[in-house]
Length: 97
Image 1 (cartoon, rainbow, N blue to C red):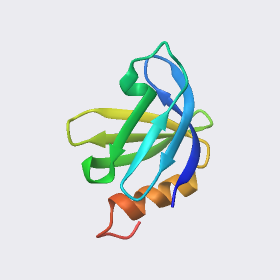
Image 2 (image 1 turned 180 degrees about the vertical axis):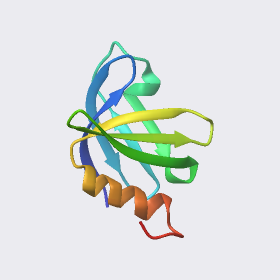
Image 3 (image 1 turned 30 degrees about the vertical axis):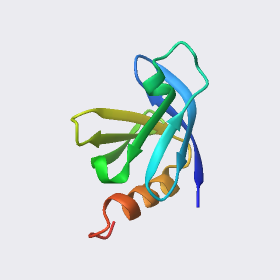
Image 4 (image 1 turned 90 degrees about the vertical axis):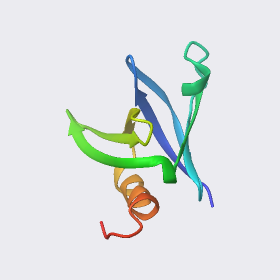
């Protein structure tokens, strides 16, 4: 079942869009044509996520997602509790969060 989150990626500024989560991956999507095609439809499989963290910057919840290829993506998520629960369930299957 797919879940949807309003999100912005922090990459050379803040780029609005959304995250679609399914059973295998999360995908950041934006309609901006001025960014690279990779960022317009950025897929991150749960099995390729090395770690993640959440911190508050000013009044915004910022998630940092580190991938196995050493790439780090930062997102402002507007449903931080539910998104953290999703990542905990899908990425940290062996530990409790």
